[in-house]
Image (tube, rainbow, N blue to C red; front, side, top):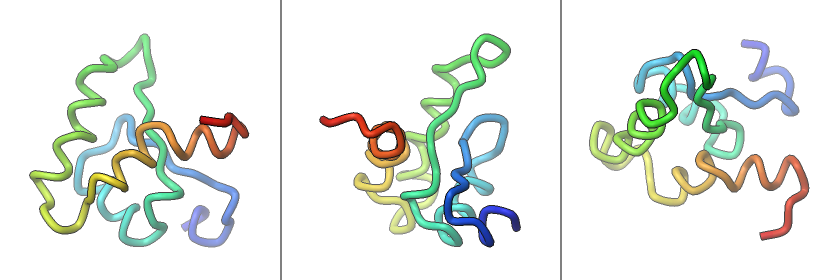
Length: 83
């Protein structure tokens, strides 16, 4: 609810299930979701595979471009990192 009302808030993918990530993508768009692993308390490879699986678990809803944004382009944009 807070992210819906405040455009400067991004949501991270760690510690939530695939369904929650897809709902965030549908409501906010892929430009407002960023990859997170919460390392060292969580395993980064598990979190990365969870995000990568979204294409197959939710075919048609999650595109390769969405994954590119989630897995790095959004953070680069926020931090003003030129790619």
